[in-house]
Length: 244
Image 1 (cartoon, rainbow, N blue to C red):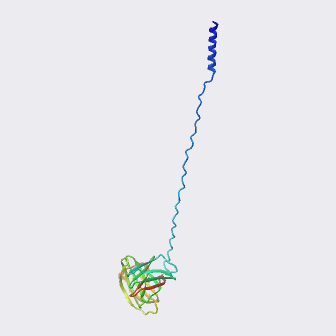
Image 2: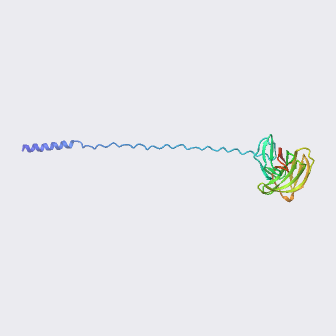
Image 3: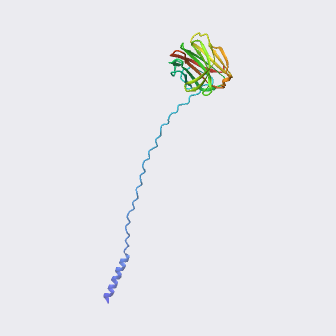
């Protein structure tokens, strides 16, 4: 009986001891914080160099004098007939034309302004077989009036009109002789309403009624040509555009 009581007491003691032991907590594995994903370097955008736009040249005044001290982009030189194309250059304060073939014509159109009534003057010289001239009311489609003075002592006025690039139809308006003093002239062409006036060394040579051609307005210009012999040189010292 005593053994039974001791056995029961021993079992109770074991039970109490087991119940007082702490329940083991499973050890948690440490959580590893993921490293941040590296962001690739973004290259800075390349800035292309901006092309420098040349400034637009200032228009000359409506009425002006060009003494050819420097070149001008407003003069457009065109061949109107002949075997070889004339060359031109700004030299020693002149606009110089060199024409290497006979019976060759060229014009220079000033593209800055359009005029109705206008007085164009120029001082120019030519080789003994050359011609100098002035233009008014130039229109690429409608035509133009042209006044020429030749070194052989004659002048003429023409109506010109393009037929094709480098090919012009000229209609004679008048022609005649003049007394040549030298090969350096001041010539003038006054276009007013339905008339054109031809001047040489400040003297009026002719007045012409050009109503039938109907040119009301246009650009101004100059002309240079060779006659039966070549080569020739034409020099323009200045061109003046005004109203009187």
